[in-house]
Length: 481
Image 1 (spheres, rainbow, N blue to C red):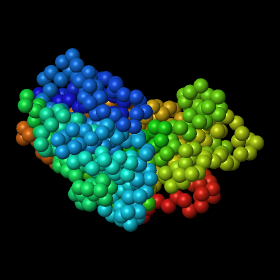
Image 2: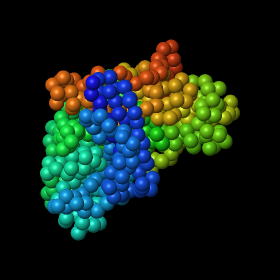
Image 3: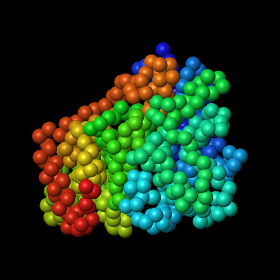
């Protein structure tokens, strides 16, 4: 029996799970917060190592034979010619590169050119935009940049003792803005376009490859970004979509090919198995519920859910377009939310409560339609986030999505995905697993909800929502084909 560990270094903490390599059973766990401000936009990456050491304390890694690393995405670590940091790492939540991203779009000839080059259109979070920002605002620092890494790349490099060879994986590389999931190759010219000069990029490893072995004989797998690790930990496959319910929302699905989308709605990531993970984001999800709860004086989302369950499908004609912070799908960055259908009989708290849930889920169904419009199959939807536990979400989502809905039991899925990757690399190294077939760990424990007889009702709710959306914002929503 082998023992492996999965390490997830998120924006706020490090979680470690130690698992049986054959079954995925969790043997023990570790946790430590990062010693940084929660909303920091840049940080000394040594803070991640301090957190890792604390989380792994007390002999947590005793007997472990391989480690996989998952980490926050879109961070950028710039290194000088000696391998030292040029400046603190820039994190994914840093929005200062918005103008730089727009500059890059123009510099290459528009959105279509970027979509064809790397499968995504530059956004402030991406490393390519951060490099442009650095070149424009800190030119002396930019001139010293000899190599770039992302957080999971840097942690793998540190665990291996800072070898001459630096590595990443397909998943992490696909979020940089200078590696194409479609071609499987870097576009170093785009790095030079952003930074002003060439720099070294990490080698891109395959899903089951090992990044190296420590002097103590501990195998370190390729690592990957949190999104890809969570999908791998959940065990999603072709026909599955994952809907994440945070303040904002996202819909991603497993697909057999990369999707280039000049509208910028689809970001074409690679996954941790050799497949692809096209993702569509919305700016508003649970924030629409919280806003409605505040408006109605509900103590929390559980109370808002209970109120919504007193209403009926269609919310007595009320429709909430939940574009409270502008919107990305459809692209309406400067719009506001809209409440329509007000009649005397609909002006009751329970109808507004339900309209907030229907609006949030219809908006995410719009995002799912963007993927379906490009041939992505969705038969089953995994719902993630604390709001997925709310009865109103579980009652409405299957009908609105028109698919089976799975609500997994809360777990550290990114860390589990990293551990599963470690088990795969270990098995390949020992000759017990194929590079084409990851270990068959038991799937996540979950509740399952079917659309059943409510499917027709869900279609009517979506039609009501769509008609309102198109009336208020005519022509704004056109799923790419």
